[in-house]
Image (tube, rainbow, N blue to C red; front, side, top):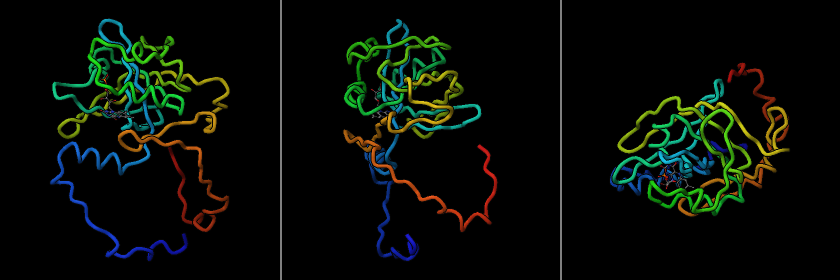
Length: 223
Ligand SMILES: Cc1cc2nc3c(=O)[nH]c(=O)nc-3n(C[C@H](O)[C@H](O)[C@H](O)COP(=O)(O)O)c2cc1C
């Protein structure tokens, strides 16, 4: 830890050229490198009232005040994904946190089912009412965020950032105390790549006082 700067010289690296890769392999490279990623299991309502459920690991906190969460949706060869279409139509969606117990259901929900099919029904995920939006949240998820669409922003050829303001949060009893979330009870699942996932049981704690030598250089944080 003390001498990180001299541990690797230039000869220890190779440059990776993303240009010759196919779009799919470029996606695979990036998603295998930006790891581990949390997973949003997004539930939306289709035009006939069916509950659509799909996982998104391009998932990020965009703002804390107001609370805004973002997912990035790719596309099918014949158009946008069902989740994206439902959100554009209803202006609302639910982000359900994925825990270890939801691993298999999460993988199953990623299957490209037809638009008139409900992953909740096929995979067997029970849903509960939302309190501030016209949506359904997943009973098996330890924490759900009800979101209202804030805006969408297109990036590149196929990616759309979908930003939603969090208007209600549901947490399983005993999980949250004030602003603190019990990570051991949450048991979040992360995505590595393809069919590889990770648990976050092995936590690395930084010792107290590690930043003492830097205190004199500090600025005040504003979130
Ligand atoms: C763990 C996991 C994470 C995924 N993350 C994303 C993602 O961030 N963006 C995306 O477009 N697709 C992602 N996918 C693929 C979608 O979940 C998949 O295309 C899904 O069937 C879309 O469903 P829909 O058409 O009902 O919206 C992911 C799949 C898995 C298994």
